[in-house]
Image 1 (tube, chains in turn brown, purple):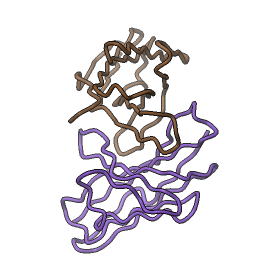
Image 2 (cartoon, rainbow over the protein chains, first blue to last red):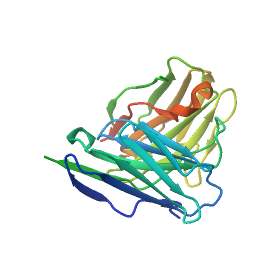
Image 3 (spheres, helix red, strand yellow):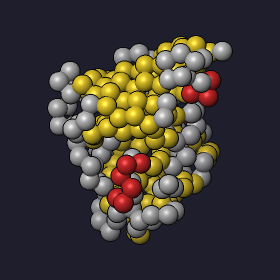
Image 4 (tube, helix red, strand yellow):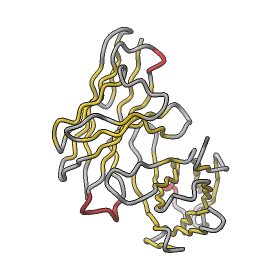
Length: 114
Length: 117
């Protein structure tokens, strides 16, 4: 049972344009959401997070939007850069305690072309 | 920011042998660490939650006798793959969270590529 889904396995965007990565979840108990970037054979790198009490969080070129009623979140990267090419995972947890578990989505491979 | 060190980064072992992977929080204390496994082109799957000073909590389907976890100090958790078989070949990643820097999310180690031949 995949509780966090990223329906697009891959996405190709031209440099300078906006990249929009989507994520859907089914568990209504999820309260905190995170986006990670991952290169092959490396651990994920934290990008940005959002609490369920917010609908938007912005950090530089990265903005995460949360639509709790639709159980949907998205990551916007603008402008996209070639160095953004990687696999992006969304993740969710039920609380913010130090022992709270992360459930990961299936990942979306972003390719930013010149 | 919070740093998690994982060692080794890759290991090749023979079938039937055991392999130990270490995960250290370098600049913070972690009462809880997490161990994940990732198969090629798949998501990260949580294997177990490592609790300092107590037994690990394993996810459904993960054999606790095969994947031994020890969290003896606030900065070190180890995962030992016992009697490894080729199907255990995978990418193993640990993570931890600094409770004083929640805004930075969970920090992951660099991962360990295990190949069992």
